[in-house]
Length: 483
Image (tube, rainbow, N blue to C red; front, top):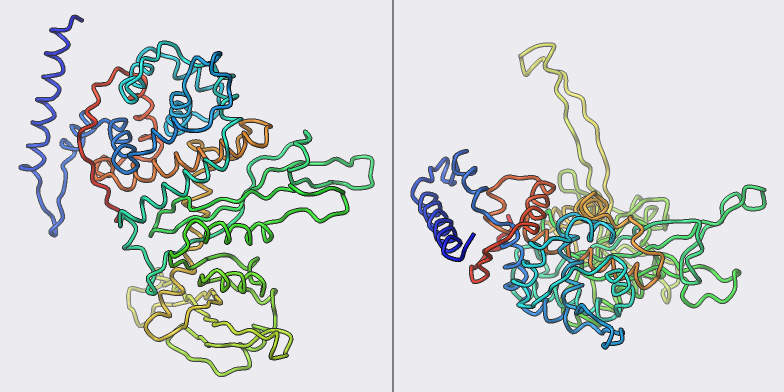
C-alpha cells in the first residue's frame, strides 16, 4: 500500500467514525429517561472503538507523567552495553500485563511483531528497531528499585484523589475507606533466601519438607464496587538471624503499612477496614496514633471481653441494628482500659414457598438470619449506623474486586515470574499498575462500558489492537465516570 492509498484509507476510517458519532447522538432512543443503544449501534461501536487508544489516553490524560517516570527509573546496567531504554522495556511489560500476558517468556512469543514495535514507537516517539528478548526484560525488572515503584504507586493514587474522581465514595466523616488484607503470591520447595516466609511440614518425620512463600499485605481504597491499590507491604523475614526468632507475619506488617500510609498521606482522612485478625488493642492504638479511624469485623473468639461487655450492657436498638458507644475493654485498670464502639446487624433473608398456594395469607415464610458485628472508632448514631455496617461489609471488595481479579487468568499474581526477591516485588507492583489502568478502562471509560463486553473480551480486544498497525489519535479526550 503506497502513501496515497494509506491516506485515503485513514480519511475513510475517520469519516466513518464521525458518521457513527453523529448517528449515536441523533438516533439514541430513551427508555425511562435513560439512553438506550440498539444492537446495531453497539455492533458499529465495537467496529470503531479502539481499546488501545482508550488505554493510552487514560495513561496520558490521567497520569501524564507516567511514561516519563518509567523512563527515569534507575538503570544499573552498563550504558555502553544497553540496546533498549528503560521506558521501552517497562512499557512493554506494563502493556503485556494489560492484555493478559502473564509470563515473561510469553511476551516475546506473543508481542514480537513489527506492528507492535511500530505502535510502541508511536506511543513513545522513539525509533525502536528490534524487540527485547525475555532474558533482557526479566533482568531489567529484577533490578528495578522497589522504593521507586512504591513512590510511583503512591503518585498514581494521589492523582486519582486530587482529581476528585473518587470523592463520591467518601464516608460520612469525609474519609476514604481503605481496606487491608494479606495474600500469598506463590510457594515452592526451592529455598528463596533468608527474606522469605517458610513453613515446615511433617516436622520430625521422614517426610519432612520446608515450603517457602512470598506474602504481601495490601491496602486498597474501596470506591463503591471497585478498588485501587493504595499501598503495599511485603511480609518477609528481613532481619532474622536464627531459626528460633519468630517470623514476620501479617499483623506485624500492618504496623509498618499504617506508618507508610501516613508518611505518604500525612493529612488525608482515612478509615481502615480489616477482618477479625486485627482486633487487637495494639492495632487499634496504632490507628489512633496515626489519626485513622477503623471499622473491624468482630468475632467473639477474639477479645472475648468486648463481647461479654456488649451482652451485659444496655444497647441502642433500631430495627435490626444494636449498638453501644464507649464500650470499655482491657485489663480492668483505668490506665490500661480502652474504649471502642460496637454495632451488631442481623440480616434476615425471607424465602417464600409459592408452590403451596398463590394466596399471600397462606404463604409459608421461613427466615434465615446472619449476624454481622463490627467494632469501630466512629461514633455510632441514628444517622450513620447503616452506613457503618455497609462499609464494614464492603471489606469483601478487596477479596472479590481486588485479589480475586488479580488471581484470575488476566492478572495472575500467583504466577512465579521469578525466584528473585526484588524481581518478585517489582512484578507485583507492575500488576498493581496494570490493575489500576484496567479498572479505569473497564469501569470508568464511558465508551468501553457501552460495549457491554466482559473483562476477558476487552483484554482480548486490547491484545488484538496491540499487534495490528494503528492510527492512534492521542489528542482525543476521555471521560472517566464511575457509577
